[in-house]
Image 1 (cartoon, rainbow, N blue to C red):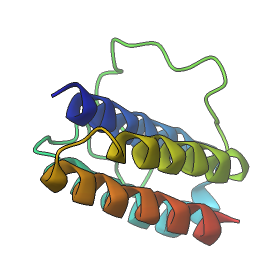
Image 2: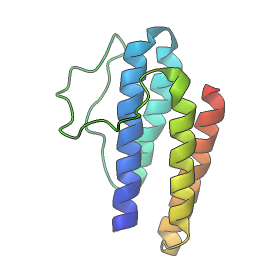
Image 3: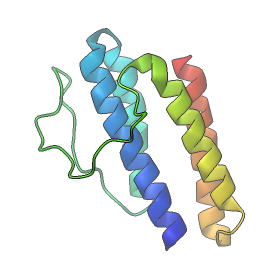
Image 4: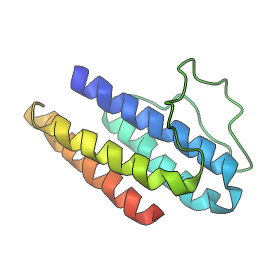
Length: 121
């Protein structure tokens, strides 16, 4: 369960970063919200649901998370490729000790995050 919980946390962190990036760069909202929606799908595949849903007209009005953002959390779309690459690497490392079913899901998530990094570059 710890591997799945860590993957859920990574996906939730990425979604929060996308929310902040949309607020910082409304001109790229369509791309950013599309990729954020993919992270919501990742959470669903992991058996979890997103905490907030962004508005296409601006930043989310949902209450902020009780967890503080990571100290190096990106706030602009320019920093998102690095966050995606880090999540991809973490998912890939988690494949090794995971059960067969979870390993396949984590490998898929790692590939998706790597593709997101390329799409954002």
